[in-house]
Image (cartoon, rainbow, N blue to C red):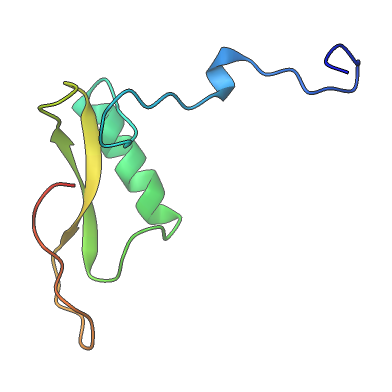
Amino acid sequence: MASRPTRRRMRVTDVDFRKCASQKIGYATKDAALDAAEATMRRGNVQPGCHLTPYLCDACGEWHIYNRQVVAVPGQRRRGGGQG
């Protein structure tokens, strides 16, 4: 039953809305995207040899981050340098 007191209540701020067709998280400013990229890298959520880099999206006008390969890692295929 939807009105049960044990049911979790969700706030709008708890939901991750992704309005870009790329389905990437959008950030309002470059600084916010840089903060998110640094936090993600500190958690270790980055591919080996890559650096998370912000870019301004032409489709939605917000900032996204992407894996940009900066070091060749032996035994791994080289990733493309494109955004996406």
